[in-house]
Amino acid sequence: MKNFQEFWPFYLDQHRNPMCRALHYTGTLLALLGIGYALLFKSFWPFLLAPVVAYTCSWIGHFVFERNIPATFRYPWLSLQGDFRMLFRWITGRLKDDLERR
Image: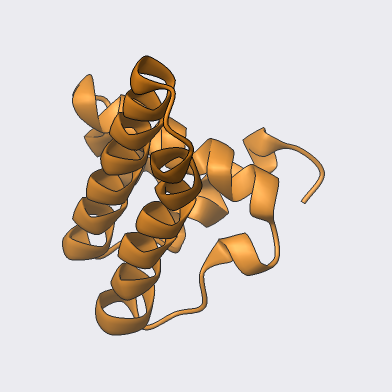
């Protein structure tokens, strides 16, 4: 993949299952809360656990519900960007349009 615009349709295709997406939202939100807690209370452990929680939730979604290999194995930075974009577009109600267009 050359850029994120090229990657985004592929990313959406890898996240067709609603339960997989829900686990991504959960993991990403928990990771953000953990990072916020770590910064607020100057605690190291929540910061270290944030990616573990996020990836555990996401990978369960892929292996159990989506039954595919997570894109992060091949495209780690693009996938991280995709996680945040998918979450933001879901929160703002715009993800449905993206899913219908793919």
